[in-house]
Length: 114
Image (cartoon, one colour):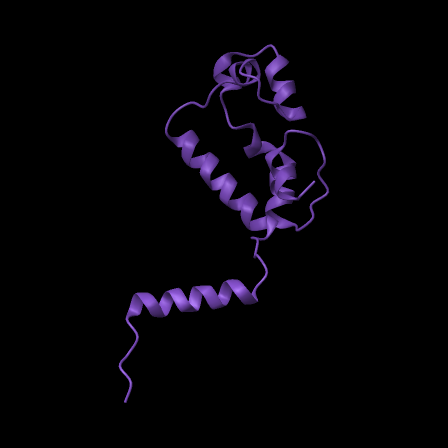
C-alpha cells in the first residue's frame, strides 16, 4: 500500500498537468463588460468620480459621449457622473458577444478586442 501524496503536492501536480494540456481561457466579453459596469457602480457609490475635465487634462482619452459631456456647458458635478450608465455601448456590450461598437477610448470596445 502506498502512502497518500501530501495535499499541496497533489494540487501542484494537477495545476502543472492542466497548464500542459490547455489553451489560455479568456472570459466572454459580456462577462467582462458586466464586471466593469459593476466596478464602476461601486466606485461611483463611494463619492463623485474624477470629472471628465480633470480626466482629459491628466492625459486620458475620452469616448465620444464623454467628450460631448466634457465640452457641454454644464457644471463639474455633472461631468463627474458615470456617463457609461446611460450609454448604449454598455447595454450592447453586456448583452452581445462581438457588439457593434467601435469608437476610441470606450472601455467596452476594448473588451470586444477591437
